[in-house]
Length: 107
Image 1: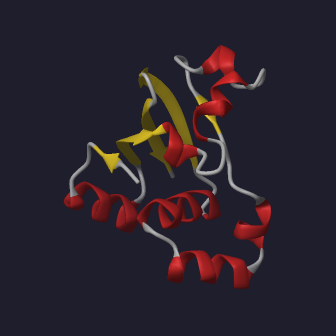
Image 2: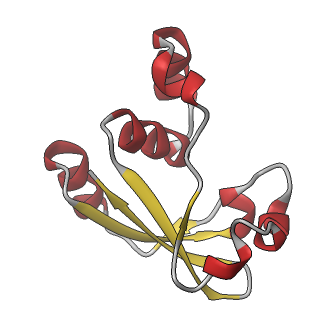
């Protein structure tokens, strides 16, 4: 898991106050099951450079038990995704190199 390009202070401020949080992530962290195969999906491939979104399943956001499990037992990356989307935010990914993405989370 390679979530980089941020400071702990910036992360803590984002969690407390919302706003925008920018970081870098590897393709295999975006899709842990299929790796970078999502880059070939027709709904994503045209937007690799301009930006695309991959929201989580609504079950994780809408089911209090699933939400609690993700927040209690998930790694930082999982908790960040759940946190952002449960507050009506979004994460937009932009390809910056082979297998590497800049991600901008906004709440």
